[in-house]
Image: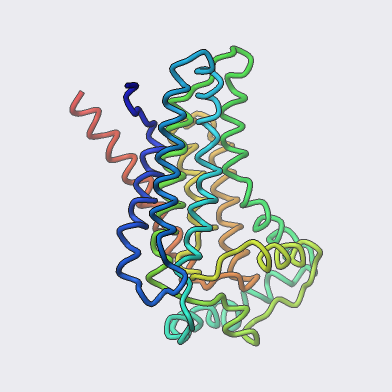
Length: 295
């Protein structure tokens, strides 16, 4: 029988889904939890096994290309699975502590006034940044694929390295959601520093969130951890492309500001999401240094 040879991103995803299975018994008060995590893990393992079998056949080249992109799809599955940890009610204990920093930033330090000082221009830019975060990983992956498209040889190792940082940062935030059941500030504290500027981009973001998001918790901010993890991942695999890498860092900072200004997240969520991304980058950097010394 063909050996199950998973790529690094696939191992990370498998580990995450296994983590959810092990975590579920400790949250018996979450009424949505049942055997679903076990079913998801079994399905993912069967899916990966099938891909491994097919990759050794005539379709191998095409299957490997598909395996470059499938982790992004499975990240969405991981995100939706977190809804199984939805709590019956929120006591606002976390939110009451977190909102104090938001009031300091937005009101006392006048961050909201500064953002709105030029009218709708900057609020519109921030909302667009928040909107585009859903596709930033796809963009980065497309850049890595396009760089070798003219040669016909895709650098799967570079793609795996980028996805490793991205998945560790993004799934790392998802993994903490069950421990911090919480509501976003626009729900828990609708009267605290609401944005005065309404643009079509904000309306579209609110429409997406009303239909496609989960309600388990907002800490840490996966938007922030994903955006920064994309930047760190590109630094690892394309350090010579400094302009692109630093542009991604600037974009991630913009997303961070957008989440607080738009009342999608608390500032505490942003700081935690940034920290998770640093841990992800640190793990990859440390493993590379260790492998270099060992080699």
